[in-house]
Length: 323
Picture 1: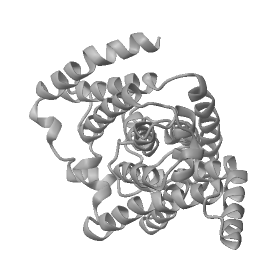
Picture 2: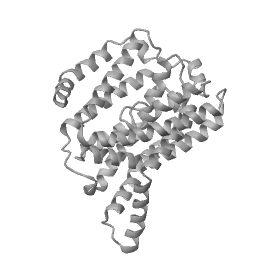
Picture 3: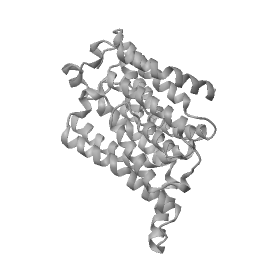
């Protein structure tokens, strides 16, 4: 399976992606209409069933390398529910935050205790201290660039980078990068060999997830594979590194969502969406860590490429608007 996917990727992905890009009509590059942009600034009216389903989408895609932002934008539009908006996405993301904190709680306690002990004993070469410092340093780039966006592009969430076409292009681009990382990565290292420059490199890659459709998990996993980490340790570091970023971003977006207002969506759909996101996020984390112990990432490469091309094809044929 791995070999066939690898050959398929090498021979077909570049040609298919190029064909899709070149043959698209100009409407692919059009900006979202003002009416659509205005409608996404508030939470759309969502019932309990839709909220549970969207919570499942959020939970599964937040930690798999396929982009939760892309799927929360595309899936409800395809189903005819409309774009739920960044406000709703911010609220149900609390479920994913709670899930990753829950899953890695013992790791976080061990790292925190290890950092304190290392400082007290001047043992700065300890595993916990190096890992904790790596998480801190690796979180700096996304915080820095996130603040720049907040200050200089206040309407970033409603800009053309959140359009379906832009999401499709980023999905294709990251599929190619993940495939390249899978192909050339040596996969001979574990977290014991993690260096600070590795953390900064992966942290810079994480900042790319500020672009909708990139996938925080996908960009960090890709960068970690390029550093020579094995797949399972790469995914584990991706999750640990993402905790500060996901938590801070979730709180900031929640504040913005509350300022915008909850619209016509009641409390029950929001609560069920958060719970659904938490349950499926926890399951996705556990599954991916087990999966990558014995499998490669080619299935995600193929999925991302197909996902992006499907969106572009739907836009070019008029099945979807480039909202």
